[in-house]
Image 1 (cartoon, rainbow, N blue to C red):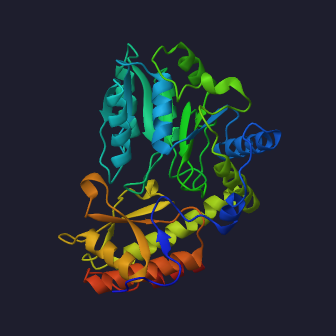
Image 2 (cartoon, rainbow, N blue to C red):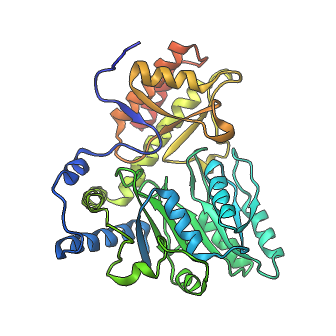
Length: 392
């Protein structure tokens, strides 16, 4: 065992993600008066840039908070105790959002789904059609479920809502898909989009956001539920917004630079890069499990597999925890673990944000090395399969 592994850590946890040197250098500067014209210009530029990433022309609010704070902001502004929301089950994070809603006094109905195959949108439409009294005030979705490596077709859910003429709001968590996978808030009819700083936006944890439709703004104005820190009306006092407390000045310095990086590459190219790296990762996992004894892709619906994180199911009776500990302690490779009922059963390879082919191949080769070291059964050829995928 290496007491202190040398070299740069290969960080392939699915959040937080690697922070580019350019972003770190942009944040390495003296503090600025957040009431000054100079900072206001930076804030305006960042708001405009994030809206371009969200593909929305509507309202944007940012917070000193992790993504969980933005979850709560959406719930606190839109719903009162006793209101009913329907959350589409995707995995650990959909259930966590539901738990938060329950703790705020909101009634939650869970539209159950198999975590490995994903929700059936046709059956969801049937459920919405049965709600003749429109008791369901909103449908809550997690666009990309970080715990399972599965994507939810949010646009199809909006279509189901429209076809059943259901007036509910559509809320979407895009924390692990924003700036990594295609997302179109306005075109998809999303009323509230929740995002965070620490994944595709390549920043430290601590800033989150909600994109809010005009319809949702009107609902929030009529909502009498008490709130303060998250109150959108209180945040409207200064363009583009004011903060309830001190603005996270250095996060904006970093965000301005990360947005420049995304736009220099071009969003379409960013999405293509993520798709290419995800395909290579999945090729490696399929090769490791080709003999039926090794690790397998957790997701079983090919059209729902995530381009930002891959969840890998360990062979029966083999824990992922010891393997991950060897990977980090001995080889300085950080991989994500299983969450909730998947703890010890899966590990997760994050491939989002500031990542390229050599970084991914280093991760996959070291993953194979750690599996060999810890005695995890696997078929050889995973790295070769990834190389073949990337060479196409």
